[in-house]
Length: 351
Ligand SMILES: [Zn+2]
Ligand SMILES: [Zn+2]
View 1 (tube, rainbow, N blue to C red):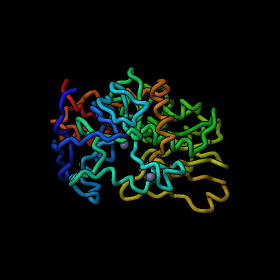
View 2 (view 1 turned 90 degrees about the vertical axis):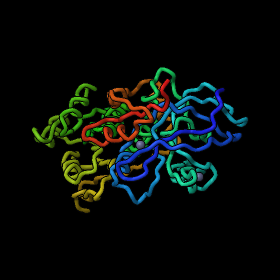
View 3 (view 1 turned 30 degrees about the horizontal axis):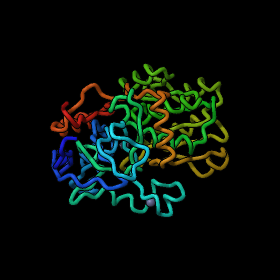
């Protein structure tokens, strides 16, 4: 194995400025793997930081959490991963706190401590090499590209939401928003046997949804509620997934639901916080369920790896053609932040 002394990683140093910094590579401990990270996709959480919308998190941010790569070294306690295995990055968790022990790894008491690297804070997805606990990487199939495998985390968060929604086969589901997360929601609902109609205002995203085979509605041109009624034989949708953080979308969602027992999944946040736009009486008389979701636990990461590995969902259309080398990471953030973009990938090695 080539001798690696320093790792190079992308980090945000201030609003609108991403740079490449270096730090020494540590020793690989018994329960860790050294991953040669290949690609990391820029998530909304990353570029909103670049845009300065989450400055409360402070700088420098060594973020990036949608990454994949190859195991090039492993500690002696690592039993079911080999050098050469292709992996994607999952969340860190300790495995021993009360939350981890009850299957709620996303609430791990010490989760944040894994993101502290001296003055830098973040998941280090934009590093060319990184040492990770074996518990926070998941094996992926070699026939996925690094950019596709890097979708493990966003797919896991979608699986979490759909599990919370208790989706049943053949249910009719509206997904509002055909951005990256809306599209993953639509694809996953379809993979689980639901029938989907996608509502989207932006032309290029509408086109992506259509090309992926979804029935679509453009609320700027059509009466979206009426369209949903047609799609559902005038019954209304069993579920609406709101994958945009927008008050009007939430108001429409409640109107699209079936009269009784509809379920509304609030998938996205925004700043300032959007309103739901319905009263307690609406929820009471219509026996409506409002379900929130955020992050994913280990079991959803495993489920998400299956969805990707057996090609039950195809995330290729959700990756922008233009890819950027690590040295050009600031340009990558610029593109990722411009309207209408799907995931922009950063290539962490030139060969
Ligand atoms: Zn993400
Ligand atoms: Zn824990």
